[in-house]
Image (cartoon, rainbow, N blue to C red; front, side, top):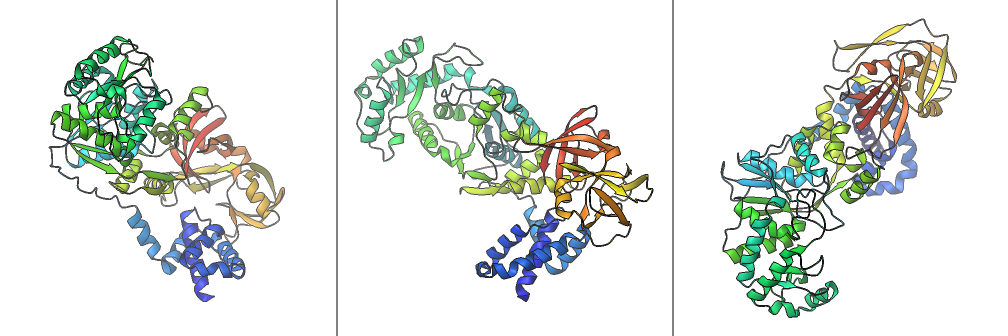
Length: 559
């Protein structure tokens, strides 16, 4: 039992220190089981001990917890330091200082979000590492109806890159300005006998590809294909009636690589060029052409695009072009985040979300609004690096990096969610107190007008009703609707956050899931400027989003 108690103590201290002084029994149980699975059989015996240790540790100040943690679990701090060291990027193959060219190539279906920003940012970080060039190529070919271009993405995407402190060389290159180039190279491929215009129905084509059977159109001569191609360009065919296909082997082991699409007809209006063009290239065809013509030396992309890479290589071989170096990175899944750009686009359009900076979109705009710092995102992505394997990364890793940057500078204020009003009988006549704005800054102080009526959280009131508690930085009371003053002694009893009813301002906090938490913050918060990031004690970091007379609006950053 002694060994178990030691483990309970160290895990409880670590959990409390990481969560503003409040340990949670559930987290400690998980750590114990991870360390020794046999704990499951002893849980009935250990549960009371865990509760007792948690209650004892939660009474300590953060400073006391830190001192005790250093004695019983010093490796915790070593681990924390190593976790947040910014990693050096791995070497890039075939790369020389000052001689590499990479590119950002986003499709404008919406703003960048925390998921797809990873690959773009890696390209930017390597351009910086090797003092190379970074091109910005907007992949604005006509997509499918399900993945259409969002006109506002033309501004949102560059704004996202700028927020990340990503700089590119030269003006933005738009695919929609380069149709003549794609047409020219498509005709060369046709003349070389590597493409044909297919008029098969989609179902028939799928059946032929699955069986490795050539359709009748594949036997066209280059002359016939050119005639049909010109007819496509003139608008003779409607959407879905004709497709320019690349002649790959119909015996290829992967049916998906058999006769892939080069260009297709689209009747839809393009946000930049309207209905000027009827035929649009597939993205992988445009990549094959542009990456060579623009002088790209290295392409970093997700391994979900390996098939597209094979198609690019096939086209480069047709032209006898030297291929750029391509690095495929593993896909990342962010634990604790549900990413769906199509769902976000739908909700933004319908008005269900307040805009692309709504926290539920997980766009870079939403991260900025929450108070996530661009340097934290850059460090988070650099830590992942060129990982070839699919990995799951907790979003808490990003929060830990952001917290490390915010914590030394963020002032502390009080906020009460779900407030209960409590009057204190027999309280000493204290009109005002001074409290440090940050626990580590002795000279930065704030003044709080006290009064005798306070807001405390419903959670604290329910859990501690009838008990003696300490109003942090003030005095002790016996907690009831009509509370009674007990003493000023700073003794080891539960500490609770409070806001004076006469020195408060109505406040709302938008949470990451869109929920709104309402309550009261101390009146000092009215001096803040929109954009300021602070910490509400025992609640979390927040960013001031809006100010109105008698009301403040914040967005939750993280704990």
